[in-house]
Length: 221
Image (cartoon, rainbow, N blue to C red):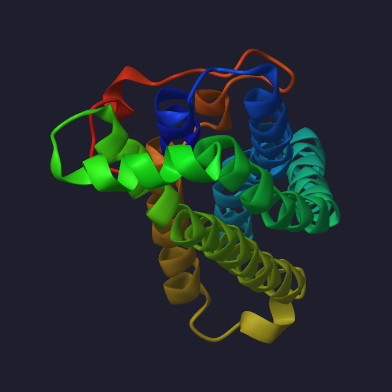
């Protein structure tokens, strides 16, 4: 998303309000989708760790049980929120391609001249490349969003089943310690991944000014 915003801002004929009017809803929809997923991921490892404590017969205070129940509920609510806003993100992605192409292309004569000049190392080279690459960039963004939602649906299903499974200790009397250790190790792994995960605030706050990222400037489109 940041790459697309930066390249469009650089390559567009001018940073017109109409260009940002296309990009801002796209960025806002992505933030609305990613933020609850990042929040859910924060809670997921804690829920898994709590279940491992149950399996290992570790003493759990009433407060700790209440606290982890709240984390479990928050995890599910955040994933459901992302699921609710996902159709809007898909629609915004689908609706962005045509107006972005229009903003980048300019007039037919202008685009024709840019393509004729493509053999020269000038800024028009990046612009024509972005025009050619934009359908694939939009497709990749759509695929990434769909893949992310699928992964979280699967992860939620696994955690829910584990939670239900561990709530009935009589079902796991055999090899309880082994399962508890494995679940604990898995929770540590999830926590390490969370620390490396993308922060949706990298895209900026919802409704804030679009950011042109210097680390994406100068890359070939």
